Image (cartoon, rainbow, N blue to C red; front, side):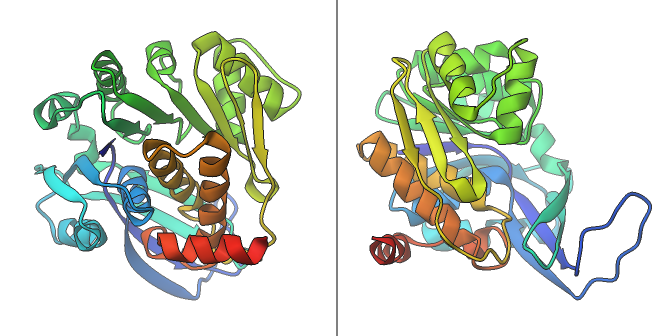
Length: 302
């Protein structure tokens, strides 16, 4: 089973011709309300990829809570360890421009109450994969990752959104996933730099004995194993509508592929295709494709 320890949000998505600059007001065109949060997005992506998924997180007692969990419930994700807290459900304020690029402000709310005790209550073992992100308190994320690794589980850490990552998290991770900005920030935190993503991933993979993965947007993705072996997949030729949630789709599909025993190259390519498809529709969770859609898309790319 894939156990996702992370955030559950409601996304308020505004569309505008372009993104605003500091102090500027831009007139938009439409508003959508959809489930989101990196943890919940990745849980839904892993479920739609075909995995059995358990979500560990927190929501409020407000009207947004039910909507935030709606698609996870429909997908059959185990929500028995999602707790109600006396804070508002996490909320993301998202603006998407005509080119599909976005700006996001996250108001964590109930997500700030998530702690590692929730993972201990849910249980995890050697047959499981723990998936974490950095949208909930870091102390709990690190503790959950360390606990899961000690119990023999695979730990996939998505270093998003970028933060000062405690080294114990890097040491506990079986797989590290980040975009180019997060990769550069993690290297800077370690006092290192790299001319290319591949060089930076190689440094992380060897130092922490992990598989280090970087998403490269239209240029695909690349992974480096602890022995230095490089696996790369090319980008997909698409015209993006909305990139919100594409990274989470990638992570969820990658976790599912590895959990079911796919080779790294296969899991990476499938995750890359799923992320590309997610860019062709609006919103985070509503845009996450199911396994059949990804198979069809990969077939058209061949």
